[in-house]
Image (cartoon, rainbow, N blue to C red; front, side, top):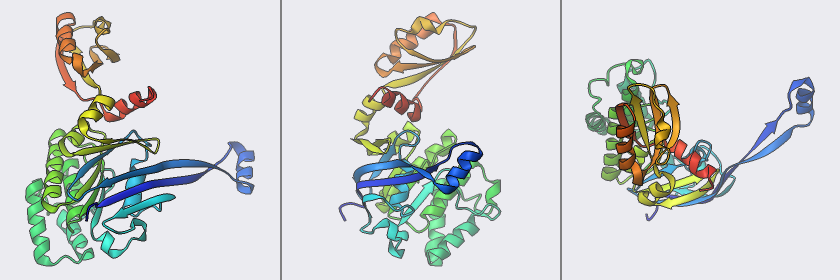
Length: 326
């Protein structure tokens, strides 16, 4: 099979009822409703090959999750065509459902008061996984995710990072060939993020699974994705490699300063853009090409007690670029 996922002019339109305020608006709404047409996804086309990890990016409301839900068969598209492993997703055929998984960072499949292992056993029963295969997969995944010690603990007693790892085990216990990941590292600390990334990378490589990943963390994308798709306001804006993406959509680094005493960061304004200055804490955006110069100037001209450089949140970068017509 050449492509595991095909989206061809995929579109989704919602009709949303609008109501004026007050009693008069309520009565009018009951008698004659007025609707507004919202195009959540507008003729988006792309493909994903088996074993390929593709980053799926864009600001909030861009249509990322809507697209994933159409590809997972949870939403019926308004137009275009979707195909996953040769199946039409919205038909929800058993052969299709047995080969895909959708993991959403803000949703849980685990049963809160049961041990992780019990939730996994329920999932294994749903997918009719033989006992021997189930035990081997649990052993393998628990070792990779460092969860062996918590499998018998109730889910409510796990940390956020442990729960997210357990969610991945739950989603992958049937060895899906296509994996849709929607913000899998949301809210996790640095260590948990690294563990999740490493697990996803190894799973895709060892199982030959196609992965479509949404994330607001550039580190997730740089660590995992071989290719990146960007959508904005429902339309495809970019499909290609990461270096051109960084040059176009993330031309800045974030420079965080903690000052020993108040000082005017506008001394550096020829080099940077001031994003935030609250007392002794300053946040600056620096063009990547001028980062070394900006750091040297900051250390020389401001009473810097601590300094950090990091990638700005993708949501903020996209907002700036698209506001400027990028």
